[in-house]
Length: 266
Length: 308
Ligand SMILES: Nc1ncnc2c1ncn2[C@@H]1O[C@H](COP(=O)(O)OP(=O)(O)O)[C@@H](O)[C@H]1O
Ligand SMILES: [Mg+2]
Image (cartoon, rainbow over all chains, first blue to last red; front, side):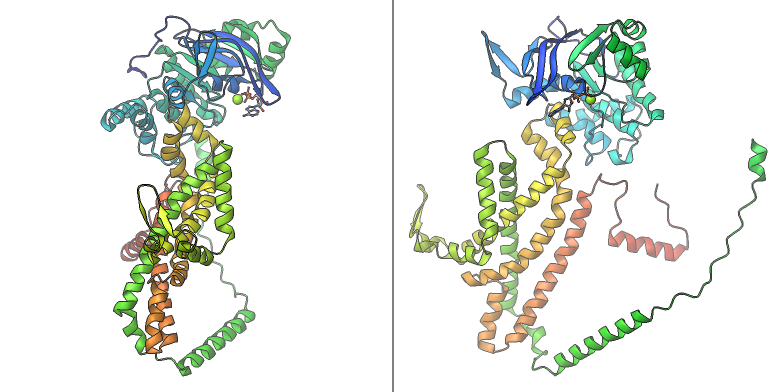
């Protein structure tokens, strides 16, 4: 079995891959994240579940600074996300520095967000060529390998509109992997898919987990969480209600809110 | 299970419907009336005092051809200026910096709100208020600098930029926010995201109205006649003032405008097709492809390939 990510980076800091300390996020007056504390270790598959509107996507987007946090500290591989700390003062990073941080963090969206004007191969090649300044030949070779690996080696010339949802999402995963990230964020990657297409995407994610990729997965697929997840957090209304091993939280929830949520989705 | 399938009767070819179509008497009457009016107009024009015989000669007259050339290149240059400045203004307008967005708003407000003819005349007569042009590194009399060409270019191009900025802005805003996010998440900067991801997709929305703008520009450039620019109308009137073939030369000019606009309409079709890439499963065939397919069909009597 060829590896999805040849040399899965496990982070250079030696510490946790992601550390959130009292992360808050408000949009205007709406207080969405109300103090999130958690740690994600290298090579861990970290599942995030919770009702719609509880702030899961918002938290994920904070990790690669698509949203600015309002309070607290957020570290990826030991580095503060979006800021530099000197003494007790925080300085915002420049646009190019934020972009550099994001290079190492792959993200997969619920609605795929493939670039519709590029073929599958071009989608996967785009960031390595444009951001990492790789030569086209090198980028193409890796893109082809990644598309082969997600089972789409024969669809490289197709535009996203010519692919099924499941195929699009697999291209999107290949596109994120092409940057050789040390962390992958998945925001409900199978929620927009027809039920019969969910499996093919989860299979790719399972392979990736076996390769040792650090993954944070927001999902409603409890089966996947139980089987592949190393830890699981239940979020509700902007706080972490319950955390632990997936089998423990899903099988024996301690809190009322967790119980009532699980009774609805299981 | 299989025997049930076997028992399904073979489909009987359906009997073709042969019905007497509804008679549309109204259509016949309307068609006859329109034809009658056309005939009357034709008779009127053939009896009019027009020397049709001179028109072909004037069509290829050197002066007229130079006018066509001037019309063409001032339209292209003014459009390019409008396009580049339009993109800049659109980006300024959407920036979060209140100064740049307000400036862009005022630009559009001013240049859209005043007639092009007035703008052309203002540029042409700018020496009246600024006799000397002083750019620091370059200094000259404004009269020398503001040639008919420059006045035409600025008048037409800056006005066009106001319209183009609105078109570009609508195009950019038509692109899903998820595209920007995906691009940022991959580590692409704002500029890269705009150039590589947003603008190419915005083009689908931008190209059709821009084609219309260009075809308008071909015709609006005739206003540059007022600033002594040697475009088609100026050249036509130059001739007609001595030859007295006034209407004939307007006909000649009209024919040339029709040729130019027709040629660019075809170009627009292909451009739109190019930027439709990826927006649907299959691209519509070009007229040429359609022709070839029909010919092949005619030759072989085979059914056309069914697209997937
Ligand atoms: N850009 C935004 N501006 C204002 N409110 C937002 C924005 N993004 C998300 N929200 C709000 O934050 C809440 C949490 O959203 P989200 O993180 O998407 O929840 P989840 O992913 O758990 O369903 C929702 O109520 C949503 O309306
Ligand atoms: Mg969400």
